[in-house]
Length: 310
Ligand SMILES: NC(=O)c1ccc[n+]([C@@H]2O[C@H](COP(=O)([O-])OP(=O)(O)OC[C@H]3O[C@@H](n4cnc5c(N)ncnc54)[C@H](O)[C@@H]3O)[C@@H](O)[C@H]2O)c1
Image 1 (spheres, rainbow, N blue to C red):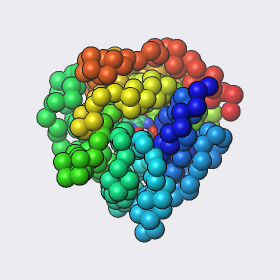
Image 2 (image 1 turned 120 degrees about the horizontal axis):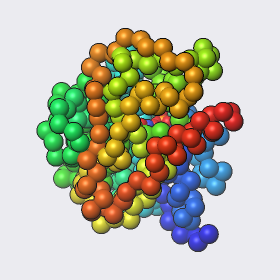
Image 3 (image 1 turned 180 degrees about the horizontal axis):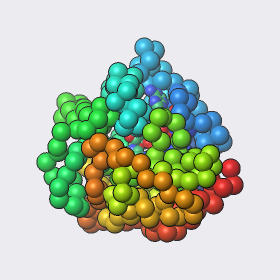
Image 4 (image 1 turned 135 degrees about the horizontal axis):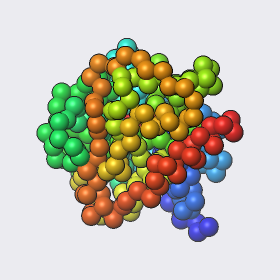
């Protein structure tokens, strides 16, 4: 392994996606400092070669500690968040603090420490309900459906503002539905679909599908998302450019449920649930030269094996 004598900070590095971004950076020889409050992230997810600072990004002492943590860092990857839709409806202020105020504290420290590039994890949630699929980056946004969606939109706007005001160098990746391994947190009253199905299978011997299960999602493997982060870091883009990170293909919830090989029970549809959500990834393919490598069939096989080994 080559040793790159460069310090990189990963927020949310004890969480699902952040832990894989950390692993990749360590593999490449970077010195990684993980910042996470462990609210849903786990110590076991943090690469043993990374340094770790336990910190809530929105805490009153966060500006001072962040300033110290970012000293000498070249890149900052921001993955810390409370990324749960329904939880944000029930706890809008807590989520606003983590997702918006936490980001502001981090941006201030990035500017003070003259970071080379800020690599931001955004979300397709900011598009709101859309009629036309696939969704390209320049589509007009619809009303955000949850506080979480609004907070992700505010994050992007704050990053653009800091780019304009202070010349912050940044790139933003809008993920679609990320899945892949048991590191995905099962926290929150509405866990992601795969974590929900595996919990339900274990507990009730069946999975609960909302609506008729024909709703389709663009499911992107976490390893492909981690790759996109590294490519974004190395790319020439730095003026707040945004890129969709998905597969450009969909899988129905019935198909996902089918992989669990147990009974399916249908329950009422959730209000505001989109029928289909799929990324247009032409921009990332053309300009970042990134494209997903893991098919859903292969990815879900690995996921089920990983979860069964728990
Ligand atoms: N997983 C997905 O499908 C998905 C889709 C779109 C966008 N995203 C975005 O990707 C990023 C990472 O998501 P994830 O799925 O890895 O989530 P995750 O919940 O697994 O990880 C988030 C991490 O942030 C930490 N955290 C939360 N609040 C914090 C705070 N105030 N201070 C410090 N640490 C805090 C948690 O402990 C956790 O380790 C988030 O910004 C999320 O909005 C995820």
